[in-house]
Length: 189
Image (cartoon, rainbow, N blue to C red; front, side, top):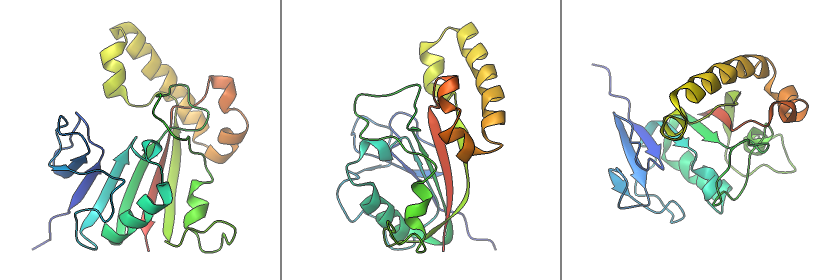
């Protein structure tokens, strides 16, 4: 019998994911586990999860590399880590954001990057840029016409940008008003 995939959703807020252990700092959230992600260790055993997702949470935390080390601890070998964070050019921002991210973020998890390796190894599977991110939030603030138009324009821009995220991130991201999100798919070695 195949073992059930164990999944973790960090920073769920009011948008928990079905089939995941949902974590958030706020007792008003819809979290299964209320925990401050700046307090280590997290309340999970080593190698507990096959998949960890962190949607727009790392940019709010003061020490990203300590968080990435903790996620490494609780992620199973060959487990997947999906991170969605604001791109540095972000067309949409939040006053609480501590930083934006770019295509160089995966370098810090490669032991060959001697100048900045943070001590834990993840392989980057792929990354993608997103011009129109977090549609579940945009649906609440945009008119139906503006929402549909922005999703359509975003899908066109995204399809071109993701032919080469590295080139796009450095060269033409500002021509389209910035990207709201960069998504990283890592695998723990």
